[in-house]
Image (tube, rainbow, N blue to C red; front, side):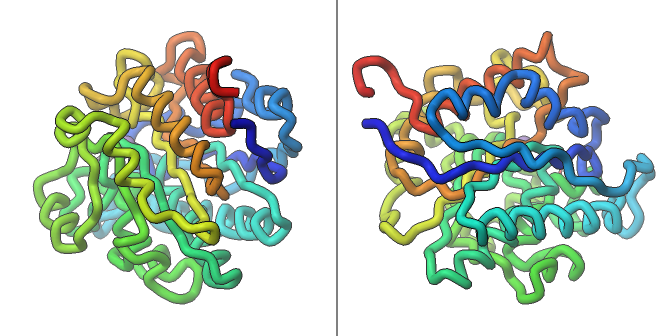
Length: 307
Ligand SMILES: NC(=[NH2+])NCCC[C@H](N)C(=O)O
Ligand SMILES: [Mn+2]
Ligand SMILES: [Mn+2]
């Protein structure tokens, strides 16, 4: 089942501006060192590395009005939104090398706008241990990497909610979350109010990853743009220690491979974010290497029996 992919552009966003631990800013280089570009090129994909975006430094201040570093978060996301939008308009598939998950706001705002402009349907697949649906009122940390999904759905500071001009960037029914196992108490209420479609680990334990993914990928059309937001802490920490906010009880290696292979089989992936990789907490770049291995599967690498 070999499939052809559009040309790919790598966009580095070296920042930990929305995170609580230092180090995610080194994610882009760790992914490059683990051979991401070469691995995709070896699959016959046209790959250009656009290098790294630049943005403000992380001042590591405590929260003000419920947010840490909101202005800096906005600046990074604006730069990323522009870069992702330019690649999509050029007919290329952007891969964002994060950076922490606050970057989901800029990336997905650009993707959603592109879908509106081209008459495509949007489906976001959010692979994560966390729902990332906090607001300034309920966040336990003030870290904006715990808020991007809420911002995209219209809940959050104006500067992020209206990053792309109109709001909300996305409707709650356009996203499916897989692998969730850590939701803060007040965040739970918000997630229920907004009706988010969450395939949490309890559900995956009960029905299995295959069925959960079949449901999450249900009714994709030929004109659906599938955006994959891959927070590396989605994976069980025993195989992926190099992240700032580990939560035990995540998908194992085989389950994660199946997720990627099933996404590849849809043939609909049009953009990808790889976020929250923290090389300062990693073991010999092993988590970056695992991420590259999984991304190869996302781009159609399969076992001998199915190629
Ligand atoms: N993208 C992430 N790793 N998010 C972790 C969020 C953790 C916690 N729920 C918070 O809001 O602070
Ligand atoms: Mn996340
Ligand atoms: Mn997470």
